[in-house]
Image (cartoon, rainbow, N blue to C red; front, top):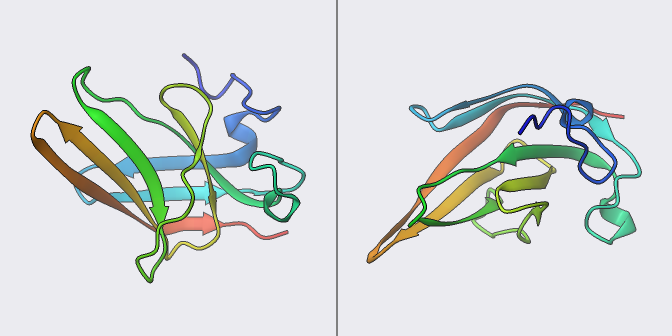
Length: 124
């Protein structure tokens, strides 16, 4: 699937972001998130503008994953909008936030935390 060309909620990924790189070694995500207006993903007009991160997740067939943003103070935000089984869109309000991937495989579970401080959040 070509995520750049496939529109999600009337927006292409390339309209939301540029140069997104995920480094699994350093657990960092870098790149630029464009400022978007009138993007009603969450059903709340106060959240229809800002910076949005679109990511496609994959895991082994027997691994369950759940993904969320975590605030600097440790609070979790509402789960992202899941467009299909693997594709999620997050509203990023600060690059102090962390992207947390919670996984479970049989009796093993844990989390992988990605730092977002390398994201550039474009403003209006």
